[in-house]
Amino acid sequence: MINNFPEASAAEIDEVMQRSLLAFHQYKNISSEDRALFLETIANEIEFLGDALIDQAAAETNLPAARLIGERGRTTSQLRMFAAMLREGSWVEASIDTAIPDKNPPKPDLRKLLIPLGPVVVFGASNFPFAYSTAGGDTASALAVGCPVVVKAHPAHAKTSQMVFEAIETAIAKVKTPKYVFQHLHGSSFETGKLIVQHDATAAVGFTGSFAGGKALYDYAAARKNPIPVFSEMGSINPVVLLPDTLKINAASVAKQYAASITLGMGQFCTNPGLLIAVECDGLNSFIETLSDEIEKVIPANMLHAGIHSAYYKKMHDALAQKGVALIKQSSAKTEQLQALPTVATVSGEIFLQNSLLHEEVFGPYSLLVVCKNVDELIEVWKSVRGQLTTSLMGTDKDFTDHHSLIQVAETIAGRIVFNNVPTGVEVCPSMMHGGPFPASTDSRFSAVGIDSVKRWVRPVCYQNCPQQLLPVELQNDNPKNIWRLLNNNWTRDNVK
Image (cartoon, rainbow, N blue to C red; front, side):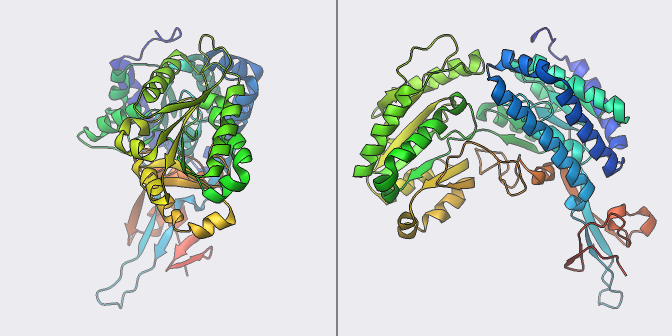
């Protein structure tokens, strides 16, 4: 039992996935306007839950009400963002190349657009009970493009997930969307996850969480007779490069900025800056002094749940026990129950390169400062951490002039490059990239945030010499939706003449 919800059985999983497949054949054919209305109705129903939803989430996650209210707003805004995308319509990437009969050989008429993959399974994230869970970005983007969704609720906030599921069920009834376009399962075992991923009806998977969890789902999918895509966002240590001139001029302000980022939400963000990299210099000593003072003053708070709490302390103590690692400072406050102890430590670049354990994420309010002998060693350390969601560069104009080639290194490491700011905080907009090279995510070509996130749940189909009446409306000669189309290599809203 998970908060009074039974673990999904193999029979229940099979029934749910079969119903999802049947719903797919109906749902993919409803109009964009109907899907947009459905998404907006989900947003409305979530808001109608009011304080009861916030109170339940706070009780299960230990997150403060203000944070949850903001996250609920992000969640409903995402749903409405995808509704607006559907009404505009160009997301299908319609492309038309008209026939040239007198070409040798003759060129056929070719028309292409994106179509939905099928039932999508979404695994709720523990650290975002709204925005990356039941009605979060994965669910909203999949529903937008015509894919039914089955959510496996995160056991750490099962009741919150159930409340959101019931709100979506209400939306389904109100707008008369196919009944099983959204379904909900509970489970905490790896076997449950494996059964869902390997079911024949599952067409794709979305996951936000740990490397171990995301990689396991990826391997389950790869072992199928017909492998399917798994889009796992698996965390990151988000390396920050502190350049010499900014440490000389801005050491105190940068240290305060990063102390706040490291401990924001008790470090329980996938974009938490878990690694700071700098070259030995006088300014670095000032940075360490201020960082130490700021960390010491931080008041500990409860972590999301007991599992994350115990994992944080184990990984933090393992890191501090490594040869050459020195504690800079921990919060001086006394911790109780599920509270985390904010911690920063330091190590030399040479030792960091020799010890891969120090490259691993410590999920919580922890960061490791790597002190390098020179810029060449800094780059070597930076490259050694492999794929990341973000990497940040803190520098002055002089720093960026002196070290302009660092941008090329940054591009190989992360999906988002942050300049003179902290990585915590992910703006939901078309230009955001939330993903990165492995092991940050299983496919660096895709974002889990913004309207481009829909590209995970679709595939291109080309129609050759297809009769007009059989073509999707977006590819017909007339352009009733007035969408942008690539017509004979030119973007236009014109009809095909």
